[in-house]
Amino acid sequence: MIYFILGMLLIGSFLLLYMYRQAFTDKVLNQEIRLKEFPESFGSVKIFFISDIHKRIIQDAIINEVKGKADLVVIGGDLAEKGVPLERVSANIEKLKTIAPVFFVWGNNDYEFNSHELDSLLYHLGVKVLDNTAVKFESSTGDVLHILGIDDLSLGKSRLDLAMRDADEEGFRILVSHNPAIVNSLKPEHNISLVLSGHTHGGQIRIFGFGPYELGGITMKNGATVLTSNGYGTTGVPLRLGARAETHLLTLVADFKTAD
Image 1: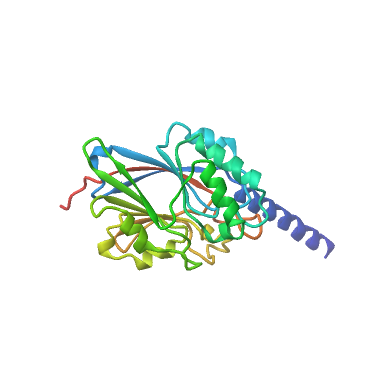
Image 2: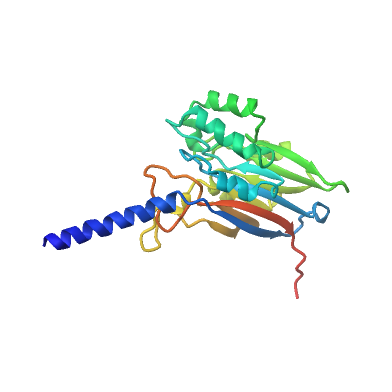
């Protein structure tokens, strides 16, 4: 009996170690996303997308892997949470700024932090906050690309209508929302081609492939391509199983496929 108990304790220890290592993976997924109606004049747009940092310190390995390869950085919410030192948040932002200009949307856990302090920090570090607003990019030939960002959906702060109003009627549209559930509200007239989100952590701990949320990935819903990230950090316990930590280097290009 004693050997059985010792064996189970050993197995449990190895499992916890494995789950801890999955939680602190430094992985960049290089993903090409082909999009219909993406303006050909932009060639390709490269976005480094990172979501749900929470308590983690962004490792130099991540920064070094994507530096010089991205046109912009998008933080998909939950940059911080209650108890995270302001200095750590600042250091993470400073690292991301070495890659490219940084854009940010609010997540639910960001409001556990002192939101006024975080807002001030973002402003002073030159991070563009997309809080129910949009930013416009224009190619040399006059084609327009909009990145819209909404405040946190689960806290009732999201106003997609205001973000839509802030964007021109014409142009290619990318929506950044911490919570992927926003896709359930998308309508054809929104003309959203791509959604970037996080929040779910891919379920974080999946038992036999099952978890409280779907595993992160790229899907199609309501006419939009939707990327939901497993996220970089964890919530609750610093453990993952079957949904390891990840970041994304996205290459957006036009899809020239035509129907047969």
